[in-house]
Length: 169
Image 1 (cartoon, rainbow, N blue to C red):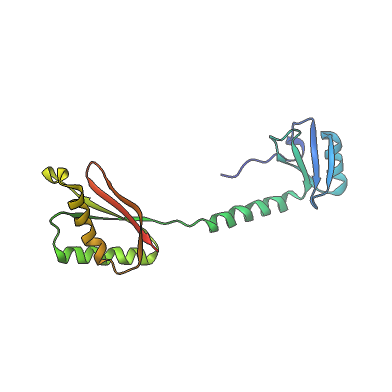
Image 2: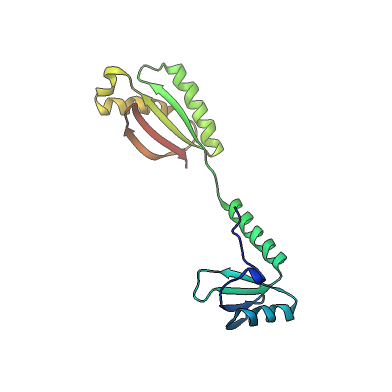
C-alpha cells in the first residue's frame, strides 16, 4: 500500500530541486552534489516528488520521513467516517405489527448513525399500480420511525419495486 520512495543512490534523476528538513530551499543541483550535501549533514537524500520538473529531493533522516508519512496516513484514516447502509424490505400487504417491528429496527439503526434503505417489494401486478398509491404504502413505515430522520434519496422505482433512503438528521 505504501508508495515506494527512492533514497540516496536509488535516485536516477540527473538534477534535483533540493529542500532541507527545515524547509530551506537550496535550489537546483546535480545528483552527485546533492548526495554529497546530504552526506556532509549526516542525513539521507529522499526523492519526494519524482514527477515534478526537476524532481524534488529532501535532505532529512529517512526514519523520520517514514514516521511522518505513517502519521499522515493514520490521521487521514481516522478522519474518514464509514456509514453502513442497512436494508429493510416491506410489501404492500405487510401487517401493522410487522411494520412496527421493522420501524423499530430502522429507528435503532438510525440512532447508531447508519443509513437505511427501505424497499417496497412489488410482485406481479402490483408493479403496475399507481405510483402515488405505492408511495403512500411506503409512507406507512416512515410514519412509525421514532428517531428524527431525513430522506437522503427520494423514492425511486426500480425493477423490484420502490426504494427510499433515510438517514439521521
